[in-house]
Length: 457
Image (cartoon, rainbow, N blue to C red; front, side, top):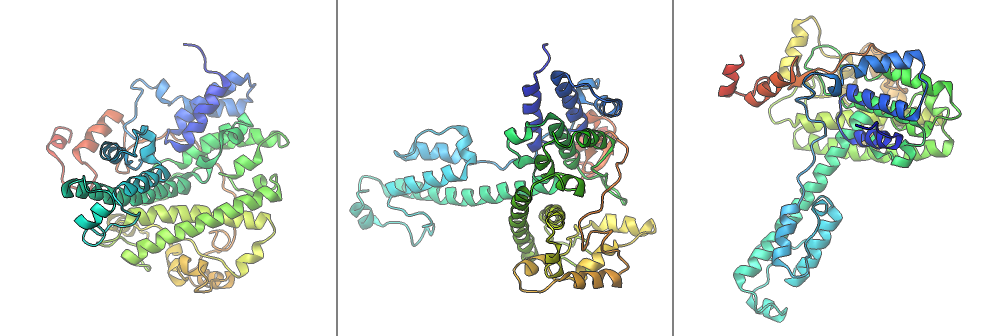
């Protein structure tokens, strides 16, 4: 098998920014990239990549993982579009990817609606349908009532499907951004402009996309020894590195200092808009079922998945926003508007585990409970200046700077590389084949185990 070219490696690394590849597999791709480029790697980078790539799927005996290697995608409207093509003369057969395009779906609904005298948004089955006289006047006399109703119902369902698709696509973007910042939004040309930057971005993004482990301690840190080695390569040639691309995922002071004010402002505007979007998602979840702010422990009726995904996205966007304001010399804005962090909801069994091991609620939870809600702050309904956040931190013994309540996140030390475990509902399992069997049997899911589980337990 011929060795991949540099462009093939870059294309595959760029594609990984929207996938969920294991960091070990991305490290292996980076090795291929440097080999195709003919890059003479320093000893530290070579050793770090070799340690990670040793556990890539290409180098393991089973060569597989039980975990999905992409984020779940919303189910598109392919089936509905195919049905519309059968029922409406103005709707042609469309390619499969049209079912994932909200603009295309809406255009079809509008165009098909004109055939039966229906305007977009007319979804009331009792009030908006045409009677026999109206159908005749609209030139639909040859269509029976049954056939007219069939077409009307389809378009009504398609509008509902379109709304769900837009919501799920937005939610998917929130999940990806919360874990990998703006890596998925990098165009290929910008990503591939500097192979060293591309390697760092792809690896750090893969680390950010790792799943949470069921634990009563800290989750695994993103920035590890491999990321540090790749970053040091960039730092040794600062004039050549594409720092603007790196700033999409790694907004440290060292990185942002290399980016122009114009590009920093572009990123700031983008994160500002994203903060407002996520604030809306948090508010929707809150309005459906307000969470218990003093404990942040899940109660019956809480949509913990939506809340936790939005909370992670909020905290990621907030960290980038703070860092950009500081670099632009505009952190006086925080003296007036300093929205707080949003903690995730915690399962009751994990909270109990914390108490039994001598722990308790994280002090950040108490600070969050004392501050106005983020969406109220962004809309200007309630004031949340930096002084208010500092006072809440003092009351609960929290360092506002070290814990990034009133300033950008402090630089973190790289942690040693650790291989990615196979997870079944957050529980580490040594073997992917065992993990697949346990997952299909319902083990660790909190639900009753199916019969297949008895064969493995």
